[in-house]
Length: 140
Image (cartoon, rainbow, N blue to C red; front, top):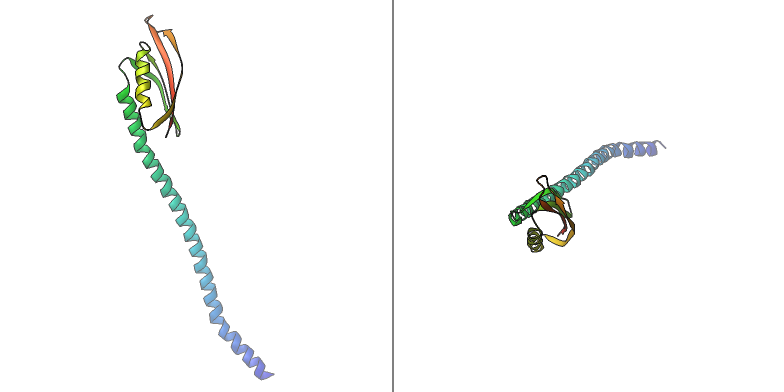
């Protein structure tokens, strides 16, 4: 019986370092899980930043293309650039410049499904006839 007790004590004593090692391993595993979660979060943030940076360049190109295609007889009253669409409202001295703008926009690679809203002829402050218009297009 004493011999069995001594053997049991010996086994238990040999387990102590193993239990300490197991505790260290668990702590390391918890740190690893936390680092993995942090890595995933950082990867997600990097992906969002890269998407924003890529959109910024294409948005700037689109704005420059629109600016360069505006006939001088048109002045804009509103410009909205959203994630999936662009909307332009403005006035023109006649309908021909609006048609020219629509042709230019239809040729832009970044735009699809150009949809004009019905235009109206209104009088401006000086009593001149002014065509108001709105153009909406989806972004590729």
